[in-house]
Image 1 (spheres, one colour):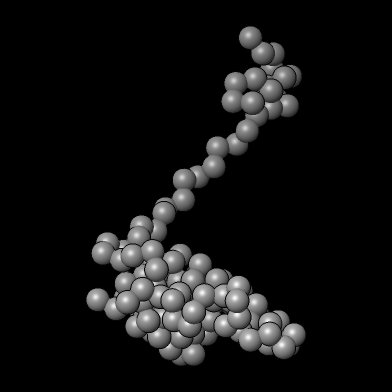
Image 2 (cartoon, rainbow, N blue to C red):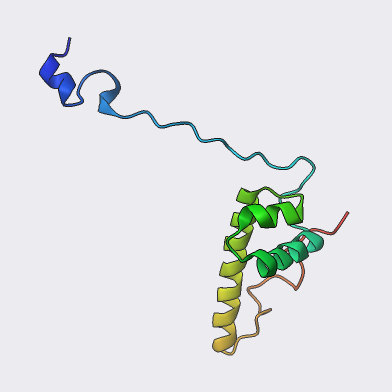
Length: 111
């Protein structure tokens, strides 16, 4: 057994680690694909204009087919793409250059 002094310093069973509370996971909306459609992206952009770029829950409600976590990750990827395109543009490279995908192929077709 472990003595009282050792237990007081976190030794013993459980390795002294604190248990973390389980976080509620936001489930994916049924019927959606991994890729955003053009109409979803358009609603996302409208939501960013209307509510501000960090109001993921409000944008999610506007889009209707994506949860706030999906909106947040889409926003992060979209911001990275804008930054990448700005750098390419500043360097004189065409944003649709040889290492990028053809325009519009980031989205799946609308149903």
